[in-house]
Image (cartoon, rainbow, N blue to C red):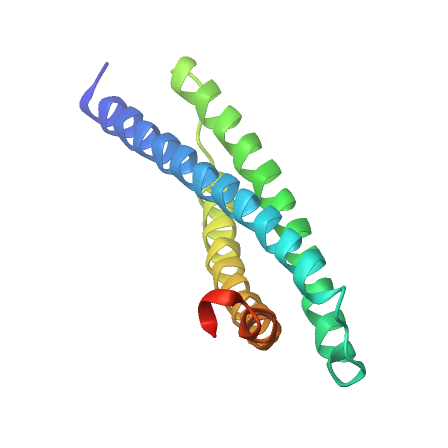
Length: 143
């Protein structure tokens, strides 16, 4: 194996590990999303107030959109990881610019997903906080 091939193999291994870590982050967001969906369903949907209905609908649809985006990213990352594995195993396989382009697209989408996720969480907490405060106001420890 010459120096260029060794460098390329090293870079592919690094990209593979980076993909693996990113996939782990997406899976964490997925778990976290299940928690937020339960929070939304149990805390907000039961005491719906008319003036909050549009906000609640927005947060609910945003949670569903984030889930769809995470699923799409998971599929992209898994496919890219399989492609990189093939390249690491097959030294004769040529790497095209499409791999770099796809990685750039995935990175951009991950950043956008994380920003959207942060905004939706902020909206959800803004809706949940007053409901939880009302519920806790009558709690024995708060009297």
